[in-house]
Image 1 (cartoon, rainbow, N blue to C red):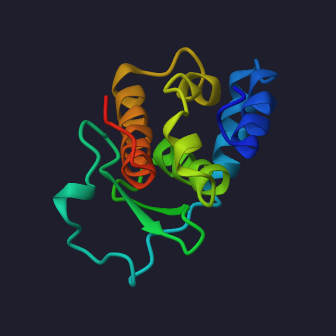
Image 2 (image 1 turned 30 degrees about the vertical axis):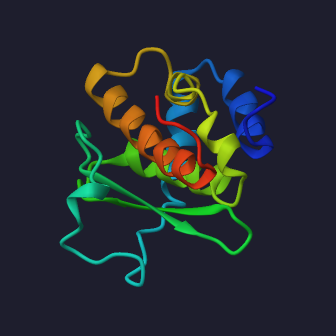
Amino acid sequence: MADIPEKLTELLEDFTFVTDRNERAALLIEMADKFEEVPPQVAERPFAEEHHVQRCESDAYVWAVDQQDGTLKFHFAVENPQGLSARALAAIIDETLSGQPPAQVAAVPPDIIYTLFGKDISMGKGQGLMGMLAMVKYFARERAGLPHP
C-alpha cells in the first residue's frame, strides 16, 4: 500500500485487526458520526445528476473541490437517512484522502471497502460503497491528468 496516502494506510491497518462484527460496527458508527454534509457553497438540493453515485442504496453524491495546493477536498451528501455505511465511508474518505496528492488518491484499490466494512458486506451495499470510491478516484484521475480505465 505504498502508493496510497499514509492516513488511509494507517486507518486500514487499524481495521485489519478488527475481527469482531460488533467492534467493526462500533468503529464505523463512530466514523459515521463525523460525517459532514456538503456545504451550500459547494452544492444545494436538488443535486446535479453528474454527482450522483449510481447503484448506491443510500442515494449518495460526491463532489471534489480544487485546493490551492493542487489537491482535492471531497464533499458528500447521503440522502437516505439509513445510509450509515455511506456516511462512514464519506467521513473516512474526507479524513484520509482530502488534501492528498490526486495520483495517490487515484491509486487507492477498491478492496479497501472489504477491509473497512468486512468480507460479509451485502452485494448491494458493497456496490454502492465501491461506487462512491470510484467517483472519488475519477475526480482524482481528472485532477492528476491520468487516463481513465
